[in-house]
Length: 137
Image (cartoon, rainbow, N blue to C red; front, top):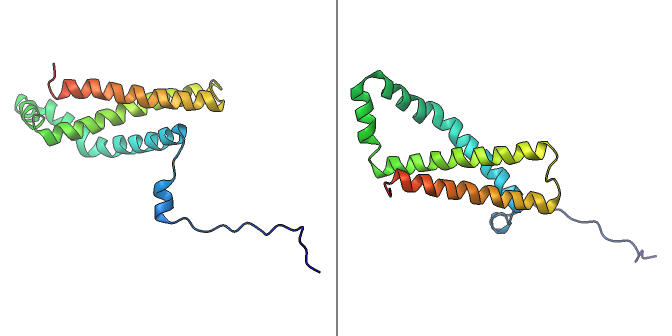
């Protein structure tokens, strides 16, 4: 006797690369991943870039002048712009997570809105600091 009322079991298959590339995360998921990326960038840049330059600037006036010359190169400014974005995004997203830890804005609409605000504010601040870095004023 055939059991026509029984539904077949779902099959779960591995996701291929094109499916991963076409998957779209909600804004809260994007902010979460960017928060981790910005934290990793800051963590890795600290011993490799930030502390050596900081130490070099305090050794002597010649070291400070050397950093001033190095920081005029475009590639260095782009690296600094990435570090600025990393700091500003990590800071803004961290404030969002602190507010979420206070159980404020946990519903879906508020969480998505706050994620968009964090992305907008961090990019706007990065633009302002980037314009200052590249000498717009």
